[in-house]
Length: 75
Length: 341
Image (cartoon, rainbow over the protein chains, first blue to last red):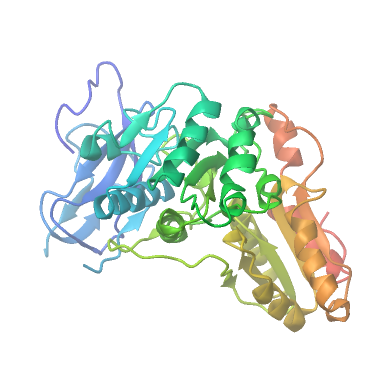
C-alpha cells in the first residue's frame, strides 16, 4: 500500500475490504488485487508485479498507509 | 486469460457494461449519480473515465423523463442501460416502464424493438426504511413484455448483464444492494465469485441447482439464495438433505427445473424477500399444483416478507425479514418435524 494514501492525522486506520485473488492464486501485473476502505472511501490496490499472491493482512484486517498487505512473487 | 480472480457483484456488473460498451457504440448508460459517483451501489464504477459524458450520462432527479428517454433511444436503435436508483422509486416512472417499454414491441406489431436494460437496486436489511428496502420482484414479473432477472452472485451478475444488454426486449435487471460487495454494506460469502475476464452470457430462463439434495426443494432467488443455503447447512446437521434452486430469472421462468426437483423430493419451500401475497412464492407453488399436485407429499410452504410496509427500526426489520431460521422451520414443517425452539 502506498505511503501517504490518506492522512493518518485525520483518519488513523483503514481496513482491507476485499481481496480479488485467493491466497496462493496467480495475479497478473497491474490487476486490481485488493480494495482498502477508509471512512467509507475505498482505494483500489494494483499489483505492482505478476506472480503468486501471499496474503499478509486478511479481509477485515486493519491497515495504515505503507503497510505490507500481501506479497507477490514466486518466493 | 483464465485466472481465479474474484469479483464483487458491483464490479462484475461494471465490467460487463464496460465490455459491451467497447464492443457496441450503441450501448450507453444513463441515470442518477451513475457518472462521477459511479452509481450509488457502484454498478457503473469507472465507466465515466473510460467512455466520457456522452455515453455515461448523469441525469437530474427526473425518472419520468429519463426512463421515457431510454425507451425512445432504444426504439431508435440505441441500447440504453438506465438505472432506477432504488426499485422503490418506480412510482413516478411506471408509465414509461409498463405502458411504453413493456408494450411498444406488441403495439408496433413487432416493427420496433425496445432493447433497454433498466437496472435497479432492490432489498432491505440495512435499516433504510419502507421506501428504500423493497424488492418488488412480483410487481415487475407480473407485467407481460418485461424480462426480469435477479442474480445472486457475481458470476451470474456479469453473464446476465451481457445477455440483458444484447436482448431486443426490455429487461429489468434487479440487483440486491446487500450482494454488491460494497465496503459499507456487508455481503454474504458467495456473493463475490470467480468471474472470467472474457465476455460471456447466461441464457435467460435457466435456473441453477446451487445445492443438490433429495429430501426437500427450496426455490428462491437473489439474496435469499444465501439464506436458503445457510438453512440447508443447518438442516444437514439434522440429517435433512435440501436441494436449493436459484431461479436467476423470473421472466422467463424455468418451471421445468423446479418441477423435476419436486418430482424427486416431493416437498417444496419457496423463499422470497418480496411481499408474500400475490407473489413469486405463489407462482412457483401454482406451477407445481397445476402440473401434478400428487408430486407433493406435504403441503408446500412459503417464506416471504409479511404483507406490511418495511420498518425502519433494525429489530423490527430483522424480525420481519425472511432468514435461515424461518426457512429451516418451513422445511421441518414439510417433513412433519417440530420447529426449532
